[in-house]
Image (cartoon, rainbow, N blue to C red; front, side, top):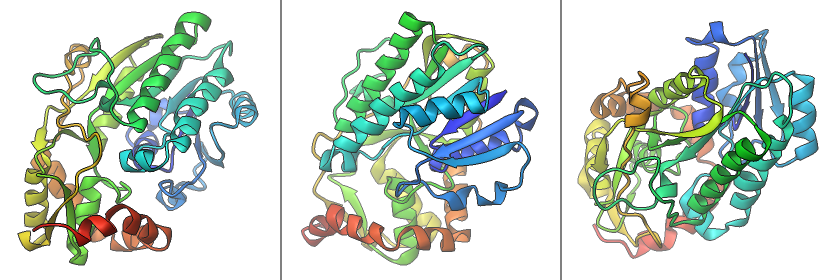
Length: 344
């Protein structure tokens, strides 16, 4: 395939690209990686791929419609995997505008770039379980109503709708995946696991929201990427939705305890801070539809978390660099006041 990967220097995009040029290399004739390199896009994640004859990196904004259309045609793209997104809920609460631009307008620009393109195979749109909102009991199926609680989740729900609309109205071959919370290497340390792991290694407080009993459904990023390859191999084109889940529902408090054990730190680092506004209490996905096609997750959460902690232990230079400069300003805005009024 002639593959365009957007958001390629971000967490999941990086892992997908590295998998594409590793274990999935036989399926890739050309891979064009696009990223605008905002705070969460790190070119260092991909720099060692320079010189690979099938790889090209392009710094570009997916919301730049003329640039995306030109790139798709220049490279004769036949498959597009869209990871590009503003994805941090706390940042969306602080300012929703970038989420509208990238997640909605950017998705439309990409859809326009491939609309009517001869030989185009699939627009794979990578979405999130957060579009369903909180799930008090059971697990959300793909047919569950969308009840986004945050500006981030609302922007992703809107993008999902545009992908489905372009498939129905214009015949753009497409599929949508909605995945549970990812963890693994190269994750920017604003999400719970990399934030707590790196803070623990540095001996800094772990700001745990509220009572820490919010439940998340964790999946290792490698399992998620393998699910995406599986969906690409199904040949679906009419924008079906597939939930992607490893069924690892775990309260944040338990994840925190495991991180402390794996990093050799004590519970005295934990600080219970003021909860996030509109914080969903529980996410849980029913992935039966995808599993019925032959996919299954491979990594137990305990094993995957241990591997992830080991990766951050071995790559301190990577996250020391990431957590410098503007990151410190963000951290103070997000957690400074919370930590000053926190309880142990």
